[in-house]
Length: 72
Length: 203
Image 1: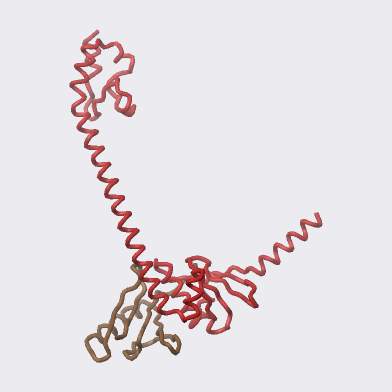
Image 2: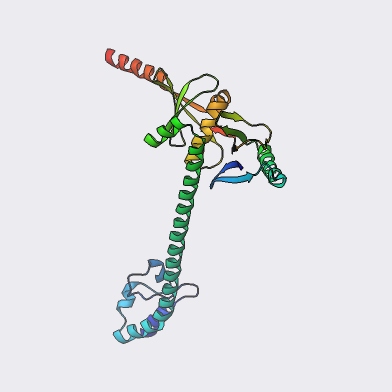
């Protein structure tokens, strides 16, 4: 089971998907694309190392989307 | 004379009737009722009669006002309690995700003092991200604190989420993050302080 976490005021909202379930993949892809349009940044967290995600990949285990950064 | 006093005791339209002998009511209730010395001129029986006539609606008014105030206080305390619970739940949720994304070493550091070290993906600079949301990133060179950074996601997030976003930004998009984050140079500040001390010594 893979997960897409989008950071928000409640902590984060989670969208899980199963690699064998196309409907779940489509739902996760839609959330990913929606937040990408809002300039959210996406990162994959893997044991081998973290990386930037530009396009949704259902093979990834964990994707974290963060709002765009600003100077504090 | 009594007629004159009674006419003065008639409450004017639009003002709430309040007797002069009660001190708990604000002074604006005295409008249209005459000065206090007029009240003292009333005979005890008349005083009692005026009190009976005016006290009932007053009491109801203040009882209702007090009840409304109590209700507001209860609602406010319930709202604050709910907000606190929501914030605590959000913090917990954010901390779980943060720990999931930290490496073993970073997790150990986080449990020690709620901070962890990351290395900039582009420059290799060592940064310590402390628990906080403003100027909570310290950059080190040879274990000397050289500057602090303040940069964070643009929406309101729990502190652990802010730390996570900062970690990703520094590890994977360091140059972009450095461009937008506010920077506070510690070395320059120290040099400036040394210069000021030197001048102060000369004087």
